[in-house]
Image (cartoon, rainbow, N blue to C red):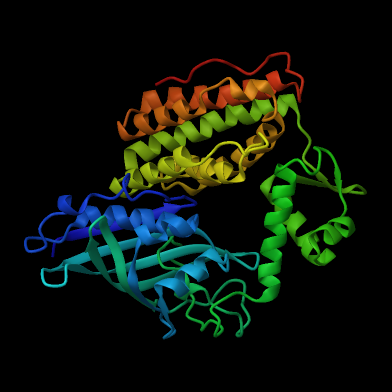
Length: 432
């Protein structure tokens, strides 16, 4: 046996990475001598990240055209059907991990066989689930690098779920290829059979579409900060029921984009200079801690995922033709910062970081139209974050993060959408 390969992604994106994250075919090593563990490890890191943040144009760099994906239910997917399923948004993957033991290569077929454990954390019907399967995989070596050729999953028997689920509820374990970075041992999987279509119910899909649409309306400036959000009007705008809208608003309260007050109902979060100062300082503290832990604990899979996330960010246009921030860029931006601290494998840090990032995004969205937003070199800032992380230089990375977040706060203050607090945003630097 040649060694263990591990690929993981937590809320991460791996797109457009064939050149950036995948070793070239010639660098993979001789099939006759040993399985190219490092190359497959990098592939799995990128593939896991793709499931969390998929883009159609990157599918062919990760999956072999002859892909055969056999699920524990007996369902078999081809490359096209699996691609269609993932891109449909039927499952919202939050974290994916695939730990593999390479068994060796076949010189005649140019393939490497492996066995492993695949874990997935996903959000479905308002509930976070953690699933686990054993796997048998085969990887094909092509002219541009390695791709997944086949995957056979067998669900690990599930313990009684909390809370109890309906016996007819469809299972997404079959499509949850890889797994969570820290799967909860008390909830290792769910072996129920999915419906013939392999997709969520129409109501579940409607709920997710409404949530995504309402979030984009808020972040896109359709509703001003402090504006009242009336379920009846929004239901007409989104052409859905008030029940679905209320559920979406409740979830956005948890995300920090919406507030709910007695007698006032739901309103868009208001912008406040003091809060901006506090959020900036908190984000510095949380993400610097997460980055330092990631440097200590992060492995090759973390590095590959970070390179992939940065590649996507660098290749995505920051602004649309009308000058507004691109939603694709914002997605890539959030993904890069998530991956940066994924190596810490510390859930409290990740959760706090995600909440603070959403709050910051709301401020930045309203400041984006200001000339102040065009002064800074954001691309250079992100490149410095990447270089410091790959160099494993904790002090340098802490300085870069601190400067990055404070520049964002300065842009908001210069844009004039909030008044600067008396103390102003601190410019002190963290200790290395």
